[in-house]
Image (cartoon, rainbow, N blue to C red; front, side, top):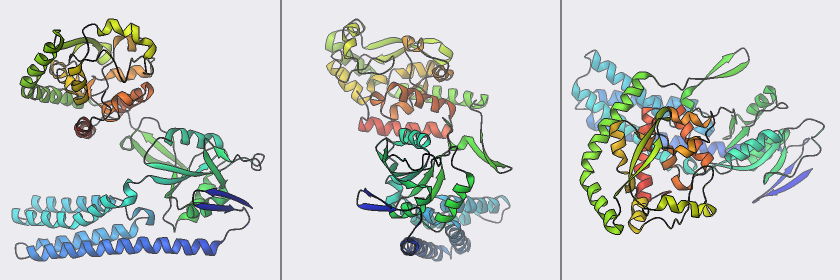
Length: 475
């Protein structure tokens, strides 16, 4: 018998005995609460949907049919979803939206529905999905870090802890080690500061005792597929999610397609090469939008150039050689935020360099002028880069523009970031900019290059506006 104190919990584990009556009672309470929550949400959703449908029924009979159809679709999704996923999954909403959209599109294409019918159907659709959508946005567990219990051997769980320790969306509360029989009696008390609370036989009991959201399995040579299968049986009636951590670096879910071959689950990773049409469309979009923004910002830029010149009499624009797509050098423009002799003074400040890798970085750089501090905090110093976007040297969104001395230290891995045009903003900017370590900045750039989508660019643009307004990571 072994007892471990973990926060407010005192965990007692044994490989021979388990109090199944206590576990069943706890499980019943959790499942009942989840079901009551789903039932209440569904009742409110149907009530709102039917109220709106009845109010619009005189305009079109499609309203009542749409309300009943969507309500039935939501009910089917709620019933078939795993218990742990019912309160936070967006899948019922996506399925219902897709189904209703297909019905409206088909009815319109075949002339079965008039314009007023489609308008009424859309109003019912929005009203019906508003309640579950709002419930998921307000669900506390959706934004709170998910408590996780790790299961695997020492090497595998150590890798997960290293990768996940700083992530805000997960909180590792304990480890269940799966070790060879020779090592099973000599388990460490902690691994990288995370307590070891038991072994594989203790996982179902500990997962419920610690009230975790998920059990994460780290595959290894000792853990078998049958172990994972038995664990899924033990957790199937709980709200605890069972996940297997497969290591696929730099690929987003949209590029991964699971398929079964024999008894093996294969993860097919789609190629990263962008279609030629997509590359052309992005380039055309960048230049068009860049030209519009340059025209809109022309007057403010002139004013800022005059203010920079007024402070010390130096030039308002700062030109610096950067490395673009395929390693081609170009001259990048910025509003000058440092003294005119900044590059000469850098040699004297090398001992105070706070940056990692080939980048020079200081949180309180004495070379920054008074107006330069304002320009950097507001990111206005980057406005002249719109000229580079219009000329095709840069993109609106892409990897950070590299300095020539940096690229001399690139290996084949890092040089991958030079296969696309650098951007005025990118993942590096919306993730902290000056706070990022060199390795993290490179990782974000490579992730962008390998997983580019038009929707991803839109999301980065929206996050950039938010980051600039909050001055997140600006220096």
